[in-house]
Length: 118
Image (cartoon, rainbow, N blue to C red; front, side, top):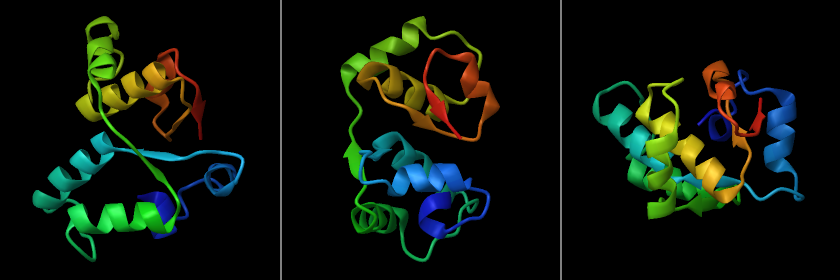
């Protein structure tokens, strides 16, 4: 969300990594799920309904969609409880399952054996 909204809290290095043609960037359906819930609760205002806005922005910014599969979900059973946020835990499992780097500013995620870019 910080990237597509141009939020200054996103580091220059992370912004450059997202924009680099050398990198394939993914938006997990888990993130879409989280955004829809936050929007429904009134915690995340958006210019359009999230189920329209996020896919359109993903395409606009040439970001690939990352589906949730059974293998990623199964990793939850062995994932330590360093982090209790269910959405972040699932993103960690996807990163591990697909051997991806996770873009985050959440320091708790670094407790897992997953590459992180800030």
